[in-house]
Length: 108
Image (spheres, one colour):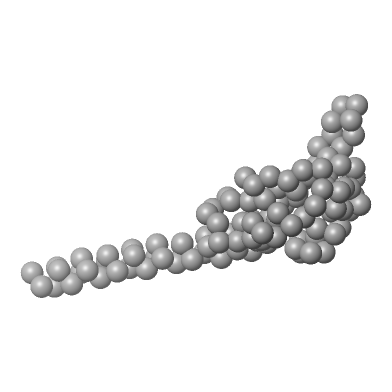
């Protein structure tokens, strides 16, 4: 009887430890390529992509799109420091390359 109770407690501890490790991994990933709300809000429209990346480092990801008759946009994404999984800031630039100017930013 006591042996069975020890087995159940041991299994619960192992499962709890694995869950804690998984959460730590998610938190670590969320804070990689991460910025604060204050940092994001400090970036002014018209700032170049090169300036943003110089200030915050390499973004988590980027996406380029073509708009018929208007040109191209590039958006880059930074995780929100201390945020929940998938909390991000999006910065969108008009024009191609690192010299595109910031046309909008959003918290996702």
